Length: 403
Image (cartoon, rainbow, N blue to C red; front, side):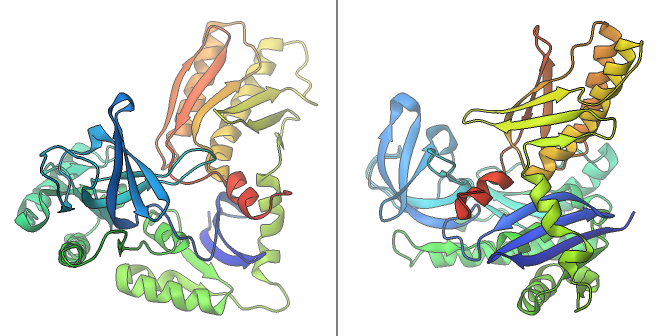
């Protein structure tokens, strides 16, 4: 099936659509300029330490205070240190934004820094190299052997290590080494800059989110990268040329006044559907997706479905169809955290096992770590999905409060 990654501008925002055929798999909405984004590295100052909750509060700008877990401070890189060997108020150190502020929660920072390449991540805080769990044993061994050959221990910035991404599976050695060399140079430049910059300085600014996601795409996920905006085309081309030259050939500047890209792929309709509470299934059943402050609740209903006399088989059919659609909706809407699913009640244990197996298989397709926890005694299914970015609905509300 034709797979594309579309980047366009609507309502003054930049949208990214990962498409499989005519259907969106992911939708992201980004501001043109976000100040404090995941991945930025700052010289921060510890404002105070709250041992009772195991946290330090670090200022990365005037009145911009972030949460830092004390357990996370294992190999910090200080630019200014007090007399105590332990972290204390007034210490200045390098921190990286690990999680955006969401609703009432402060942004979180970490002292374990990461620089991203398409195939590899350079990380601090540990000297242990690692490989994506999605790769097989032989590929893991190949990549770990390469890491040994390209050791990046350096006194200037403390311990460092490599983390090979899923994209690294099967990638030629030349491309992997290019990534590692580039990241090593970036890191050395970062450490040199840190020696001279004052507190609150931003030492490293992540590329715009819509560019960075290009490095997260598996080669099998996007055969083409399309944009219909001339300035975005130039920006994407520059990014790919510098960081992912092997993907430049995928970039296409879409131009057709008679059939704009937004109309060809029904982007406005797809966006609207991804924000609706109700999602219809082909069988006539439907989902109700309701985010709350603490978790997301998904209810499965039979709706217009008519299953005849075989009640259990009919309910299992709707539930399995719902499981496939729920996995798609979690990724499409970028729903994260705790998810509770209320499937239609099934009487037979074998039916419940089949439903859970279907849901688990679909969740494994998600590139973001998603875990099926269990089915409770009330027949509610618990799922967790790693928080990477704000959900699509929250991003939209931040700019369009009435939506």
